[in-house]
Amino acid sequence: MNKKLLLSCAMGISVATGTGWADNVPALEPPLQLSDTHIMQKIRTAARYLLLPVQENEENARVNVVVDNHVKQTFNIRLAGDKVDYYVPLDLSTINNGAALLDIVFNANRRTHGNVRDFTCWKHLKYSETFDTANREKWRPLYHHTPPYGWMNDPNGMFYKDGVYHLYFQFNPYGSQWENMTWGHSTSKDLLHWTFEGEALVPDALGTIFSGSCVVDMDNTAGFGKGAIVAFYTSAGTSQTQSMAYSIDNGRTFKKYSGNPIITANIPDFRDPHVFWHTETGRWVMILAAGQEMQIYTSADLKAWTYESSFGKGYGCHDGVWECPDLMQLSVRGTNRKKWVLICNINPGGPFGGNATQYFTGQFDGHRFTCEDSGETVKWMDCGKDHYAAVTFDNAPDSRRILMTWMSNWQYANQVPTLQYRSANTIPCDLDLYEHEGKTYVGRRPSKELIALRGEPVLKTASTISKQFDAGKGAYEAVLDLRAVKSGRTYLTLENSKGENVKMAYDADIKLFSVDRTQSGETDFSDQFKAVTVVPVHRSLSEVRIFVDKSSVEVVDGEGRLSLTNLVFPNEPYNKVSLRTAKGSKAYITIYELKP
Ligand code: FRU
Image (cartoon, rainbow, N blue to C red; front, side, top):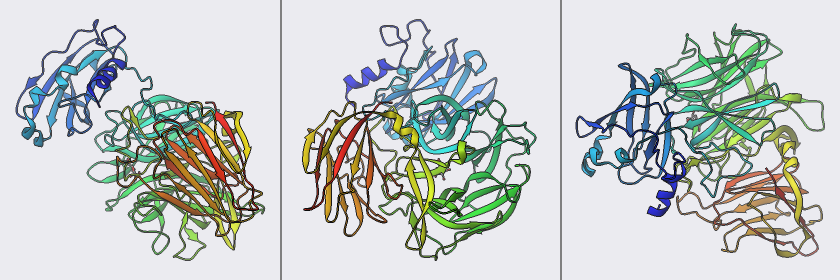
């Protein structure tokens, strides 16, 4: 980042005082140096925030926030050594009327770079009444959920109650790279417009707060109250254990259960509990990732859990760690049958490298999941590079199974070219099942709420064309009608004036759909980013919906049989479309601006 930009960033987030600095808030006392790597900083202020300057390529320093001689909070932060990339806020409103001591230990390697007392962070630490989260990122999506600042990975604890969807997420409030796992919280009435509600679960003596789920305890089985929200998460401390917390204000604030941890094991990768109510046995069921297996536990009261069974050995892809499970019953399209689906996110091992979402179909009797396919069968829910930690909402209305995922890949998630925040979620999709050649697959259809975003079409035309259209701010849906495609290849390219493009191709003969993002814009922040992702399609496609936002292209079949989710970082919106079909075939494209 150049100096000019740096300055404007710094000004953008400080109090609106004219100078960019908090004139009306007294400055900090000078820091106290205690050794080459140890600094104390006294905090005395009536201001709401302490703004902490971050430099992303700096090493982490460990900060203990000491209040009345006790550690109130600990976090890791890349305090700026020579330049400030951005600021993050330490909220002082809950800290002893703004009186605290920051006890800061720098990574010992810093000694080779100079004296920590000379770091630029001391000049830039500042008190402030406000923290400005106005967007500064050209790639921030317009209709996908993102955190206002800081890092985000997996969606956690999603549930619906009283007309509101709740989305918690793996959140780092002290930087835009993975660290300090906390559950951030956002709410929405329509799955598309989200309001950030702050931090819901913060690290404690048992560890940081890894992924998990929430249930709505309608019948007060746990004794926290009728309709209490009960959250299950992994405490990631020296070991990974399972913990719970409950909320009696509809998920706004949580109280951690005093009997934590509730499940322990001598297994290093032991995490991401997903809990649901099993009507037939009248029990709660928890599915939990344990190495390369999924374990199943049951409970009557959400507190005492009994191990029931494990699933996974000899089934599906095992080229990575199994994480973030979900288990649900879905209807098979066009029949009155139902089957169970076990979702298993895996990292690495995905079809195009890094993480992806595999699933298994079969039966579940309340104790054991039985897969109906042979061990070698591998089913992927999405074949793009950026579909991970896919899980569904608890208690969604009309028995809907709504899925949202983290739209990134551990291969490069920490390097994508945004700074104010990192990562978005995918569009919401509704799940069901369909059959094809004797096998059952998950159908993943864009949720109906997305239709409401459509404005008037900005382009409506038939093949073969190459046309410019008004891409607006870069958020649109391109609907490709393929019903008149008889055979051969149909090519669709989205491009901008810089020649950056995403090339899509549908081969109606061998039934493959591909998305090529090798020239999509910024790609060189990681060797693993450039990719051509391909998915086999079950039966001829009739309608493909392409959801484009500032930094993503999600290709989904209107019937839910195809899904390719990919990030892109074009330097301006793609505003030219080229469509070409084989002789004797015709395709039509309609582009709608999406208005969030
Ligand atoms: C998946 C994951 C989870 C874990 C979380 C930590 O992306 O590795 O297994 O709970 O991220 O942030």
